[in-house]
Image (cartoon, rainbow, N blue to C red):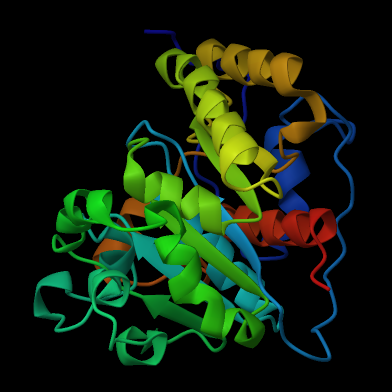
Length: 309
């Protein structure tokens, strides 16, 4: 294990004043961000005058524990803070996204599974409002694991999720799908429904190795099922600037993918596990934390990359 660099910035800093302005100071110097590139200024976007049609983003990585769910929740909440309408889709049978928003998956009568597999169920039947204005949820639980098997015999099985979401695309500005950590049929459904993919990538060597396989899957879906699918960006997560290993992995990711790597980097902080217990995004649980500032900056960067029509 690599020893921390004593000259590196602290791991978890919660400045009381203007935490967003502290991000460059925390992770970079002389305007250079943690990716080694000049850190652009992403201005706060104005609230849209009208809503929809939605940009659908799949949060995808076949490796577990890389920050997919955390990023889906907090990116969605941060975008909603700026006045945009966001729908989060929990597309993982573990139901972690639902739990992270304070929902007990075992108490749900209707979930995204029913939306997929039962013809009489609509999005409105499953939809839950969150405590964040403008942020809604399609929850999930272990029932969704059965859909992987049942969809095999369905006609146009890869388009099932896209068909289910179609009636509400005009109601939202963004739909963010939290995929399960695999490259199975559920993930293919998410990629088929999406316009783009965000790949959360833990700054760790073994996580880096799996990206090539994911890119192959994205290319196949693009070629065979969804020609509009594109890579929105690779998001470095669990970054610890104190360790040489994290810095080297991030450098290799930037060398391999260039501008497809987000300038925003999500650092390690004890706040993220706490938010899961609290059942709310870090943007409300610890609004003045560096973690919250990082996801607000990511939201501005995403809005700058993919402005909604």
